[in-house]
Length: 117
Image 1: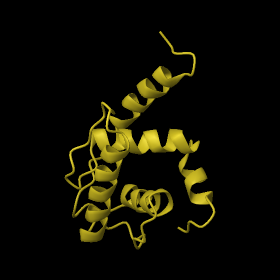
Image 2: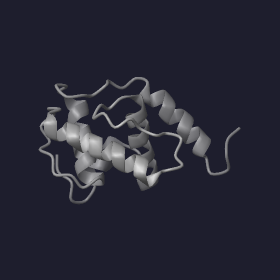
Image 3: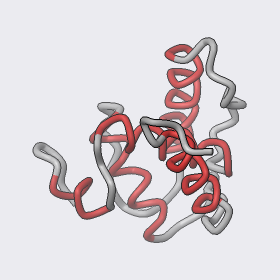
């Protein structure tokens, strides 16, 4: 059943979406990494170079995000392993951040004030 606030639908949609995304880790490159770097800069207040290269700084920023996410939701069942790898659970956490900030698309992220491509 769907909850009155729609959270079950959002959770199910998010779970389906994350199964099709590539695992991002040190050494990965491409548009998905660029988007991740921009997300970390805009929503977690990091200052990564947005170059599409998953290097040591991006890995540390992901670790910090995972740790912060765990700290903010101590009773959260989506506890993340702090490993610096963006897999299914970390994508789900990023999706939860989008939902909590009212962001529904990559275009909205790019348009957020103070963020650059």
